[in-house]
Length: 403
Image 1 (tube, rainbow, N blue to C red):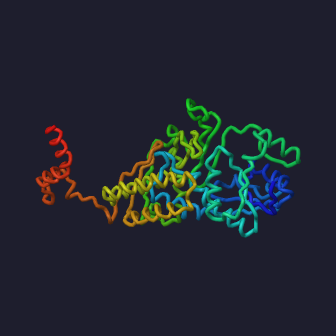
Image 2 (spheres, rainbow, N blue to C red; image 1 turned 30 degrees about the horizontal axis):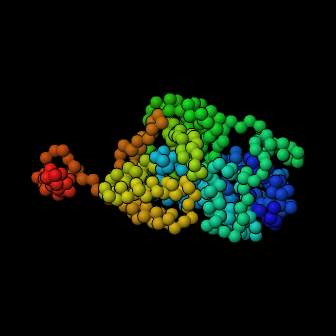
Image 3 (cartoon, rainbow, N blue to C red; image 1 turned 90 degrees about the horizontal axis):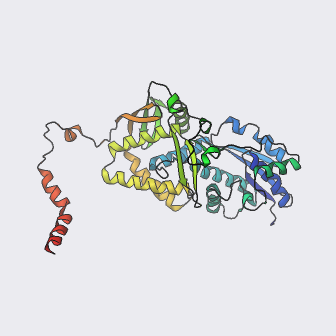
């Protein structure tokens, strides 16, 4: 294999990346491996002892980057303004975290003078495209090493045997029921009984949220303040984007809000099933769409929905660092200029509903919309509008009759 002097590895502390460190050193003539860990809010348990594990596996050093605030401010919030929901259901939790991780990893690789980066993504998943697409856009001079696409190990048992032969300790076992990915925005669960679409997810498939059946019998209300498409306060208290998200995660999870069980189309062509929990994000998305109902006219709202649909595929497919991303975000930002107001939402038994909403930019007028008597709308004007609106259909019908 080609010689690399230094490789930066996207490291999690799990079985795969623990095996990748010694494998890289053996297969690239004792190159130096720097482990890079991104803290995107996955939780203290996932990060506990990660530096010691990396060093024990053979890394020369382990760099842990705190990306929580940047992740929510620069990736989650902009995506929220577009209204992006992949295939109508998925709130893009894993997808949104990949560009901030990849960007930070590239920065470390450049600062360390590395020749290449490496990751533990499999050849079946979306993440390999997201990571490598980001590297191509940000630092094309870096080589990319994807061990799962080139080594001869095929299973967890193979990895465990590989580490045991080298006396490298791991807390992993041969049985891994689920594959999970967590960050501040969500947690995803795949594998286990979920591999059959005829199986209902067991309660073990859910980790953040209570089941709607076990949620409190009393609804909880929460008020969100929105400024130009960004949620800036909860119940009147100003908070940073990350604080808003973590606060709402805790409150919404107690009511079973944010669970989805979907079969999605992966970028590489296959379908996969996953259970996603996005409690706070579900509340935030509902709040922004509620303000949009008040302030966006019909064609602008229709365009925002198109932007959101396109942006969902862009994020899912790993195209964040592209001109198209800049253009779509610019459009969404312009639309969000008037998306300001306050929303009161009700969380109850797995559902979140906007029950009150107001905005200084609201286009809703009781005077015009009332079913009672009014003095501002002459209903006779509708006749001429309808005749012009349906003129093309009228002309076609007349032509058809003549035939």
